[in-house]
Image (cartoon, rainbow, N blue to C red; front, side):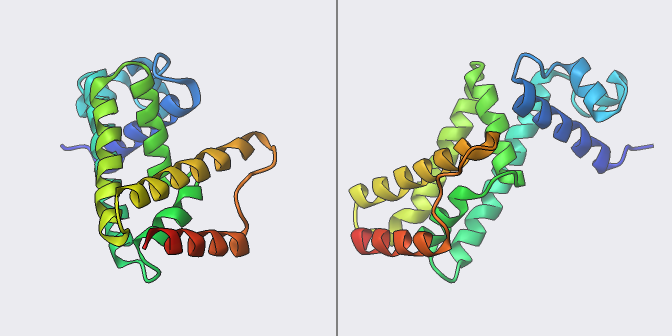
Length: 180
């Protein structure tokens, strides 16, 4: 009898959560099984090794980026505006997958580092046709990084340093003028 896909996703969710909350070293097979509420055998049924878990996380990230790129392409206000607005989104599936993958990369996991670089290249390729040159693309990409970083500063209850809606609209208008 095959196990439901939900169980496999639950194991991957637990692994992702452990990476985010406790780091790469703490995300062992035993800890992941406990966090997922499954036996180690249940975990091994879906993921035969810690590397298989990492591969599953990277596949999840790729799928989430695919969906994000589709939304970016279809965004009524354009790719640049979409990208900047979504740079302040926290605790959604894409954000969690990015953070978990970053934890793996910080632990020296080369495929995770390659995946993060690939994500950035894919986003840049989607934005490039909407800006005038490489410097304009760098502006959009680095501003997005800054928005994401500053948004994270408030995660401990401190003041978030992201613009409110009115300031975000003004910022996007300024960037669009500078990059088109």
